[in-house]
Length: 450
Image (tube, rainbow, N blue to C red; front, side, top):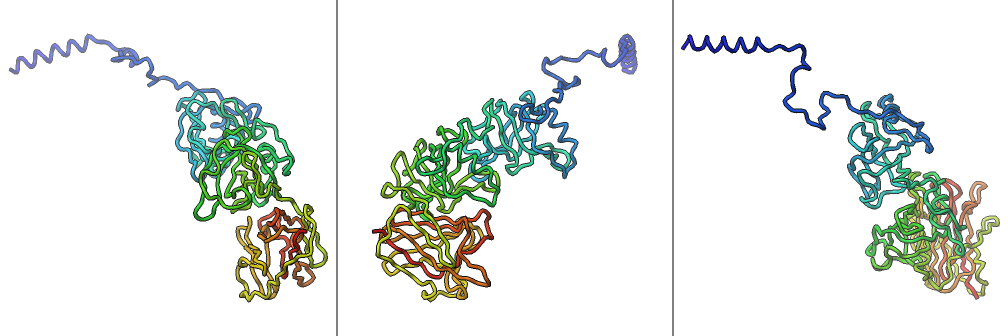
């Protein structure tokens, strides 16, 4: 047995000695896979572009620029072109943004993370089919090197999809802006977007008319608030759409059914608009806007709310309806005689003929109308409202107001009023969310039309 082991050992030694290797590369691989890059060089794309709209960075150039940042740095907004590799998430319920990866060749090689980015025209995503793998895109916005090791967009809607397969949002939409925002000549959606996008997050437009087609209906509340959330655009597609947020139905009344509007309906919206958080054009919310026209059917009696004239003389503010002739019938109320407690929220006030005045916060997110004994009436802060619902058509409304320490509290010079037959809406309109001049109204006198 020992002799046999020695013979086998000797044969193995001779066999191994007969083999000669000059280097590792002379050793044959067991099998060469055609697509196997293991051990070879990864094909890279040369950085290119200047980051402008006309000459976007490719992903390689963007990556080189972003990787030079530390964890606290951020690029200036820039244009980056690539192809969608994979989509991580598209949120259409709350934030309206998408997170996905792009690269120069559409593969995971050298990919860049597009984090919490908006859709074309810097509006929210409304469908998870709006982008797909393979799409050629241009992203615009600032980029960061998250934690010093992950290049990505700055997040929270700081970036958006400038171009999708050649379809750009250069002007906000492919339709040219048109209209003047009046009842007779509404803005188209492109015109409204152009006007709204120049606002900062604290500003709002005066009430304007905007015409478009419903793209999709997000929600209609018929149980509590009676308002609806939906999108409109010029062509009825998601391209260049505008968000109609918490808006009422025809005649400025609450929605009673979720079938009252649908995709494809042609509408005219009336109300003030804001640029929410500086990046989402939409109506001001909380019933500040409503559906003036639906497929040609207009609100109320067929006469739209008309912008009224406001004149101030001393501590007297007069709201005049140019479309009406004043008659002899009036109704008045002294707000200091209602027995209201000091520093309490203004209630709905009922006049002697059954007409009502409803006080609202409007777009002021902090302060609503309040009664103060020192004022002997009710204070309206920036963008607070008064809604009049009367028993007859309104020709004129007169406020007497408070004066204190040399200041006449007669509202802002930008205050507005609109009349719609028996209804009227007063807003202490102001460009910022707070500040300005309060309207400290003590008495209200309404004069009806002939």
